[in-house]
Length: 309
Ligand SMILES: Cc1cc2nc3c(=O)[nH]c(=O)nc-3n(C[C@H](O)[C@H](O)[C@H](O)COP(=O)(O)OP(=O)(O)OC[C@H]3O[C@@H](n4cnc5c(N)ncnc54)[C@H](O)[C@@H]3O)c2cc1C
Image (tube, rainbow, N blue to C red):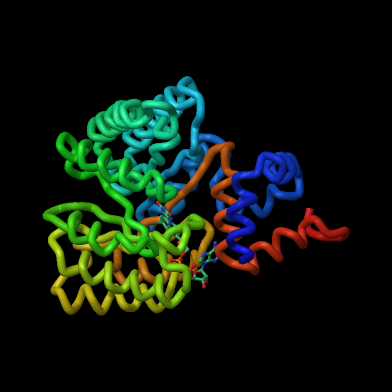
């Protein structure tokens, strides 16, 4: 209920204006977002790669202007050049949302595909990789089709599947072929019961079934969850299917369970941190608030008289 409300607010221009322009939001946002510009993002990645890996995400989504989609593609090209120039390509990749590259525009699939190709080509030149984030349900087919087309030229492009969707077990089977990089997450949007599991138990059950398909397959599973029970389950599956530590990775978000990240990495497991940066943090931030009531309470307290400035 609370999560649905916050996800609705994440699309509301009035809430956006209020939250974005409040000076009081900044310290809370800073927990989840590495900074506004490329220098801050690179600094955050440098701090992470001492023991983990990173995926940098230039925040932005649901672009409705062609010029903005073009600019985002150019910014991603600059980002992967910088990753290469900084000598970080072995440990830092990028994550990109196709709606930031134009997917939501009229005839957007062609525009997003073209832009994604430019980003993938620049990433290959720089020695790094791209993972295509998954967004709301109406974009799932177009996103997976785009990933398939990208993989014809760039086989290491990562895809994301959301365990809350009823279709995802079948997508896992389709996509678990040799060297296929698949990030499995629970899913961050507010989807209806006709297409998605709505209870926590159902989503977790689906996550387990999907993860078993990926771990028993021939691809490279990227286990994107902070859920301790699922992280343990991933380890059990890896052992059961004889995967060594270089044959899968854990992924978590910047600012969430950082101690668990470093503890896992210290055991020799590969851990990648998804690091978002940029000015367009509002929808990402609202999704993070919605995932945990304590985050919202912390945020609201910062507005109270005498609250944290
Ligand atoms: C690397 C990565 C990439 C992702 N990419 C996508 C994507 O492309 N598309 C998509 O739809 N979703 C994506 N997600 C988000 C994901 O779908 C979930 O919404 C999110 O990860 C929360 O689910 P959980 O698996 O951590 O489990 P939960 O059951 O939500 O959380 C388990 C525990 O983790 C901690 N936790 C979780 N979320 C928070 C939070 N916001 N603040 C504080 N603590 C928290 C809490 O301790 C909680 O008890 C991604 C997640 C990760 C980690």
